[in-house]
Length: 632
Ligand SMILES: *[C@@H]1O[C@H](CO)[C@@H](O)[C@H](O)[C@H]1NC(C)=O
Ligand SMILES: *[C@@H]1O[C@H](CO)[C@@H](O)[C@H](O)[C@H]1NC(C)=O
Ligand SMILES: *[C@@H]1O[C@H](CO)[C@@H](O)[C@H](O)[C@H]1NC(C)=O
Ligand SMILES: *[C@@H]1O[C@H](CO)[C@@H](O)[C@H](O)[C@H]1NC(C)=O
Ligand SMILES: *[C@@H]1O[C@H](CO)[C@@H](O)[C@H](O)[C@H]1NC(C)=O
Ligand SMILES: *[C@@H]1O[C@H](CO)[C@@H](O)[C@H](O)[C@H]1NC(C)=O
Ligand SMILES: *[C@@H]1O[C@H](CO)[C@@H](O)[C@H](O)[C@H]1NC(C)=O
Ligand SMILES: *[C@@H]1O[C@H](CO)[C@@H](O)[C@H](O)[C@H]1NC(C)=O
Ligand SMILES: CC(=O)N[C@H]1CO[C@H](CO)[C@@H](O)[C@@H]1O
Ligand SMILES: [Cu+2]
Image (cartoon, rainbow, N blue to C red; front, side):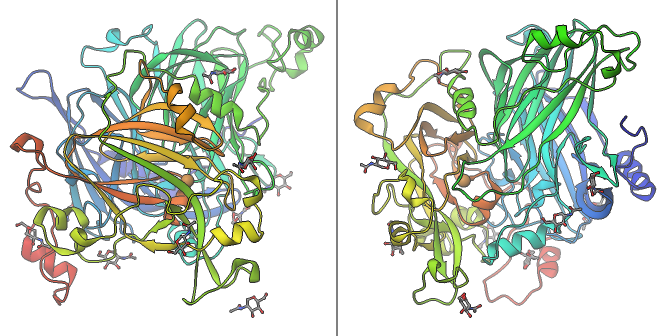
């Protein structure tokens, strides 16, 4: 029996949470223009104490909640979020998947689009949500802190739930898969950036609950419980907010019908397992059509097969529970496993199993094909507008590499202590800008270093057999390919350019998949495959009819993915892997989209009160004084 008492927050934290919720101002007013409304939130970022696994931890959260508050909007609405930073960390908030059309200023990437919001500072984000419906999310865009600073951003159709292109659900439920950390996240990020080995989470969560696989001195942690009514349909809005792992999600005895991904509708796809990588979202319908009972909802992290280094990752589970089926006495006999009718017969009279929820049979932890097939099976619900003429072609190789701690030369085989492991795109590891002027501001003003930055190579400088299994482990082949370097690389695109990009995962020191996320634009996923991309035969596989439209493309383990996007949103946009350790180690770059010929194809000036850098790099004003002089 799970304990009935909530142990997730101690009393003090719970009180501060209640206070925090009370100060969330949610104004929902109908504006004069059309049906568009304005949605306003205040995000109070602070540290609260949380107790799990017998240990009290300070977690940095929004409004005392983990996950943070969900933002509900109707397509066409404008959103205002006042961020009040009462935490000791520099932060920004990124609105993951929101196109931010002509509004790069609100994209929320520190030193790329804005100065970080420092402790005791405020910042207001304003943006419109136009032409997108479904599930997106928001998260902090500073290393590791998004583990506890995230929440759903749900966009409903302007004409109401009856205009969904699928049967109207009876209820909509965000399902956020994440991980729970006891280590100080900012410290864990610093350790990784300085080349110390990985830090790991302590548990996985569904909607903030660790679930009964975890315990404190034998007392199980609370499960997330989804109460359902027989016959009703539930729209699960699933988000993977975890730092490190792709998850398989199953509910015993039930099937999903996937209807959306990354706030874009897909052709209904029925499956008993959902594969979701960090940064991705999946909308799926579940009908409560099983014999009334209790069913585990299990999220299992997968990882690349051996000989890859295996990282500690955790399965978590919640419960889908039919109303009035809490006790075993009145419920009909239920399945103990969802994979065979025979077992139902065997155990049908065994009432003693009544309180144990049915568990689904999960894929193997090293099974990466289930994810590959899941992602390959999604197509756009509508005919996709695929631009046929391509202006620019990029071939981006996603890899690992190393640099030497003390300059000169070094080799990893010599004890690993002289090298820093980095992650690369075309053999460059992104050096996050450290100057005082964010790149967007420098780009807008035509000042500073952004105009002279190193260019991201369009293709790997020295091609090799990217998916050669021999590269996974140390050896002469691997060591010859390992040396790399760091730079703040940018790639410029003319306004309106049609860009085709092939992402290639590699076997160098790992065989991970890579969820690649592009800010400010959606990508059309033309095709994906295993092994090395071969234009001569793979271009023929492109789906030019109904390919899915994503903001995050999961590039398969030891495989590739081909995409197109139209560079029609002027600004400075981050592109990066959404595995936090790859991002922190530099698997990232900056895309600069130039202004078009007219006002409405050009990036407008920064919004009023946008904090800008107030002088030259030798300016001695403190940041505080600087901001006061500017007076927000
Ligand atoms: C926070 O941001 C300010 C301004 O960019 C910077 O000077 C400071 O070093 C940052 N602090 C941390 C802990 O990164
Ligand atoms: C930040 O916002 C809070 C709450 O709205 C307000 O009390 C505080 O004065 C603001 N601080 C600054 C520096 O503007
Ligand atoms: C949490 O994880 C850290 C890092 O892996 C580890 O040092 C610590 O012992 C873990 N705590 C528990 C309660 O397992
Ligand atoms: C769709 O998934 C099934 C297995 O579930 C697989 O056999 C099939 O090849 C997949 N389709 C594509 C296009 O990958
Ligand atoms: C690095 O490792 C080598 C071999 O294990 C050892 O001899 C050397 O002292 C180490 N260097 C440092 C700086 O720790
Ligand atoms: C590349 O490596 C793969 C996997 O090890 C191997 O099957 C393939 O033959 C290699 N290709 C070439 C051109 O050497
Ligand atoms: C990667 O870059 C490093 C440093 O610039 C260079 O020495 C190395 O040859 C490059 N490797 C490949 C595979 O391109
Ligand atoms: C960029 O332009 C804005 C507005 O003119 C100005 O306030 C700011 O100081 C400029 N920034 C730099 C780095 O020149
Ligand atoms: C954190 C904690 O108390 N974990 C315990 C969960 O239960 C197992 C088995 O009963 C113990 O070994 C763990 O210490
Ligand atoms: Cu990656």
